[in-house]
Image 1 (spheres, rainbow, N blue to C red):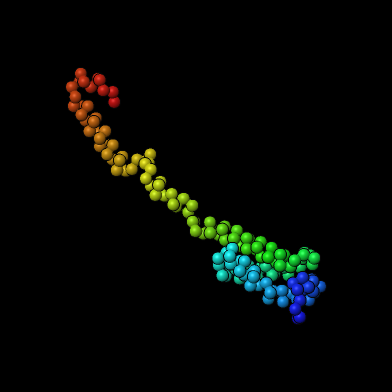
Image 2: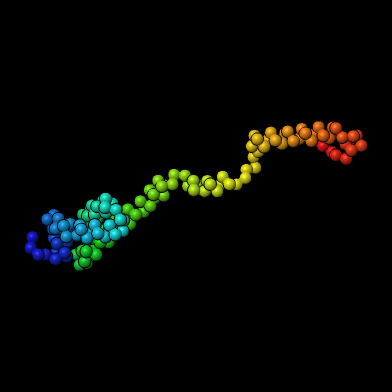
Length: 149
């Protein structure tokens, strides 16, 4: 192909010229990759964004307005695809990185006192109560009436 402008290539592509689409892909794939990489900081995801961007552009070619700038249209698609990837990753990260959402708070909960009696505490209280009862029984009768148990 001769030196055609982006808008000329886009017009040819919208009329069914697959070589024009291939040329647009060659012209913009690296630019879309750089855009995606700046947003995602991940090589593999950025490559996926490039593929998805051109797939969406191809599937929705009827939406392209030939009077508008092709680069604005393709960059808009690329930006939206990258944002979709970020949303997806954020959801995956929030679900994967912390399978137990309160795990970080566990040390805090370990420091809280429990209202349940431990077996050791129950035994100590039983022994103490038995000793107190025995002491009360050993008291003279005149002192026992003062203590109600």
